[in-house]
Amino acid sequence: MAHDVAALAVELADMAAADQRCSINANSDDPAEQLAWRRLTARHGDRLGEIMDEYGWPTAELVGEEAASAAWLIAQHADRQLDVQRRALRLMERAVAAGSAGPRELAFLRDRTLVNEGRKQVYGTQIAGVKDGAPVPWPCEEPERMDELRVEVGIEPFDEYVAKFTMP
Image 1 (cartoon, rainbow, N blue to C red):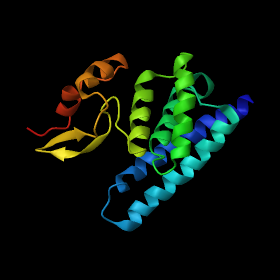
Image 2 (cartoon, rainbow, N blue to C red):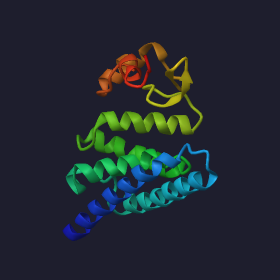
Image 3 (tube, helix red, strand yellow):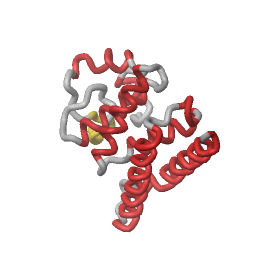
Image 4 (cartoon, one colour):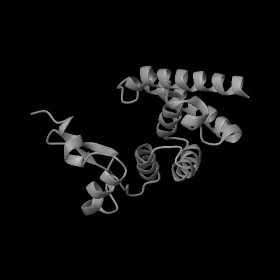
């Protein structure tokens, strides 16, 4: 089992590295690059589904911090595999409740899943577009509480977050 877990940690880290290399293609104008991105994220989503079948959520205790972050990234990018994303969300919720995963990452995954379902997000982590040079979030369930909810899970207030991306 220990060898399997070590191999799994390496596999997850490799998948995240491939994701990061290819993610530039996600919004490309070139359909071939977009297709390469979709194929990669679909393959990774399928594999994450298999990993969850066998291990549940790959926590840092199981696979180490880097591989646990990699699993979260793969779940985040499984946008066209809502079954995988929803399952990752459920398993990650349990891991957070047990203290073996972080509420910040869970908040991002929850928002991403809600937006992919066509629903309003909670924390304002998913950006719909840019208006007057500033990122604009997808609609939120409680926009007046968004910053309060963000701080509860360790995410900076939206204006601070936006300031990182806004051009003067």
